[in-house]
Length: 560
Image (cartoon, rainbow, N blue to C red; front, side):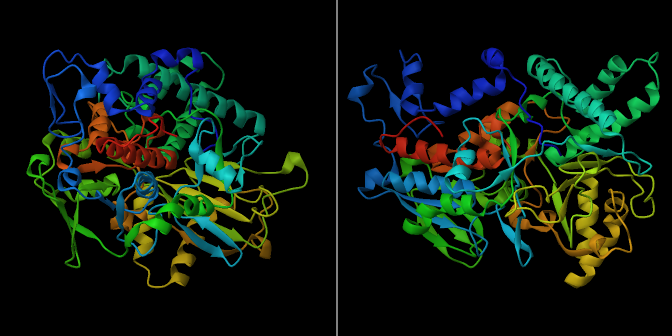
């Protein structure tokens, strides 16, 4: 985990970048525009777009494209059910309410926000259980919301600190060389993947690319080449904290899909709470809610049948709508294919199975004081700390999992607190969440986590086991892997073996509009925002506008 921007496409290269071509098409999505761009000398089948409309006349203005939607045929206000009240569902509701739709949000939890959620770490500080970051600041609506809600964000001027496998902190100048090389290789991998995706084997991983690059960049005739290659291979594992899975499982063929919006990566130092409230406000004021209502089945119908869609909940309630927007996480969709009746189209069901789902978790450990800090800049530690393949805690960590830490004491006075945030992923996440779940009380869970992470926070500067300042005072660990409504995981990613990743995303993005079923969520966003809060927001906005267009509403076709 690092604040390094994950955007490597220059402005001059955007015309050939798959990511930026997709964003341009996504942000200007409009059904009528797409029609006008097609050769409609014959019949145009719109089944996959807005319903069963067939055009035989080139003069579109003489034909009402929207007369097939259920509510219009029945002569009443259209009713839309949104399954899930996370960021995408709330943003979709905002758009639809603004265009005169009746909206009901059906949410399995007793709160709004989905994976955007805050908990109390100490009486004085909230922390985010879900996303912490704003990925890219240029033309990012979440950044604009942060500014309009006075949400504090932070970054660090200091370079990443690196602790080697023996527990010794590397000199800052040496750590900087390794960090710069790592990000240079990442940038090279993005460009290589973008240009060669059609010929790269689906079985080739990002780690495979790293190994080839290290052999080229650190030749055998260079001093200490074995040591340097080993450290760089260990640092490469840090990519897992971005995607929620190990670097050896990251697809190289579709690595280009991991590129983000350009600009800085900023940490929401006073949490996403105010941003969530702002996004939720229109729905809270004007929509209907069904909280603690878990959907068990959605029965869709063909547009020509002109029947409502029926949504059934586990409590036995049945709700009827003209359109249904399903914003459940990708992991949930993977686990519940039988929710939809009739079954989803084969290509859509395949796309849901194909895309990976991460397992990023977090552990916050707070102390009486930030003992790792120092008033002398040369002795200060702030921002990011990587502990590489530790061989000094083999009893508890025999696999030598890297430890990725963000320290939270170096923000502004109102947002700083003496806390270390550990990001875990892959097998480590699975192990820790499983072990914590076995314990019967909060006290036992905290004690286990304090002890498990002690070998790592005790390697930080100025640690003294006898000092009260160095003793943990509170702890919070996420458990998304145990959360069924979260799909038992975190967010979408792209793993080895993937053959049509871009087409899979586009297929999920399209949904099944001819049956009144639309999909939204971070897994259906523009490629440049997949796996992010911005992606969830954009996807809900896009679906809301598509539905509004399908009913003949005039909308601003630009997203964001």
